[in-house]
Amino acid sequence: MRMTAGTHPDYRWPDYRSTLTRGPSQPLVTIAPGPDDLAPLVVPATMLAPHDADLTRQSTGAPLGERIVVSGRVIDEDGKPVPDSLIELWQCNAAGRYRHPVDNHDAPLDPHFAGFGKTLTDADGNYRFITIKPGAYPWGNHRNAWRPAHLHFSLFGNVQAQRLVTQMYFPGDPLLAFDPIYHSVPAAARERLIAAFELGRTLEGVALGYRFDIVLRGRDATPPER
Amino acid sequence: MAGLTPSQTIGPFFAAGLRWAITATARAARGDEITIEGRVLDADGKPLADALVEVWQPATSGDALGGLQRIATDAGGGFRFHVARDAVQVNVVVLARGLLKAACTRVHLAADRVPAAVPPARVHTLVALPTANAGRFAWDIRLGGEHETVFFAL
Ligand SMILES: [Fe+2]
Figure (tube, rainbow over the protein chains, first blue to last red):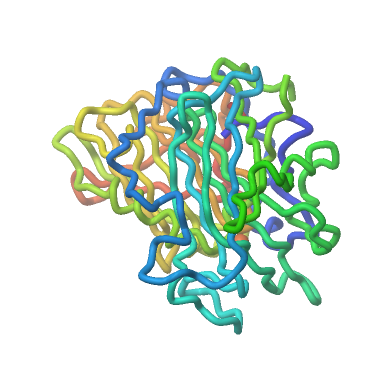
């Protein structure tokens, strides 16, 4: 994952407490990318199952919650599409609970919602997931700390240097104002993490539509000035 | 130029969603490989039981997903992966709750392979050391503290 000044959070962000013991504090060492960093990454389509991109159809019944479509385009910073690249998505259910052994939030699990999926971008970098809107959940970082509703995204890009792990938020969420993880991003870049509601992407009678476009490092990017 | 999408933490709850590739890329050491074992540790020396380690080598025909090995650390912060004995470059990416962006490093089997840009006093943090067991090397990833591992801005 490449670092560019002004876009990514610093490792240490005191309002997010665990960064103080887990975030490196020594300066990063700048080196030029090696051939492996720029080697093409090909993901076999055989790794995808039919309903991997539709989290509402992975069980014998429908999950509870508001159905949504989340779609967009993955491009690089030169505006070129990032085709045939792997995107992984994971999230909590509509009640704010993850299907995960260490999630002890007192909210119900949904037997029909696993909360994860994956897909490949098409030749133009487009992707689309169908899922349900995740709930907010408390996380104990500070008094009355609640995460705004979010989807976790993991992107591989076309080369290792483009790898990105991030989170997508929803427009108008009042919890964004109080979330140190969201606020760890420099102000000028923060709103890139908020999806746009679009009637044009909405499936009439089925699911509300959100657009979330994602911009990865250019394939030939040089190390940032430090 | 379009504005880059910022990084956010992987959080503590990735295990179910990302397990498929942990499973798909898990394998035994090949004939020309050695095994590297260690722990991910925080600035206080406490192990991270909820870190994801991604190891990248040049892809070979037997790989499930390029040259990737994806490992979730165990309850003691432990990980294990395999690298070619003569590897030139092994990239290691650490993702975890409390890491707002990936921590990118490299592991080497000899100090003279470490990039020249690394300060001499910190070279040892990138070198896996042989153990009493043949074919097994030891290397810890320290996110802070006196022997903090060198992380790279690529
Ligand atoms: Fe989350």
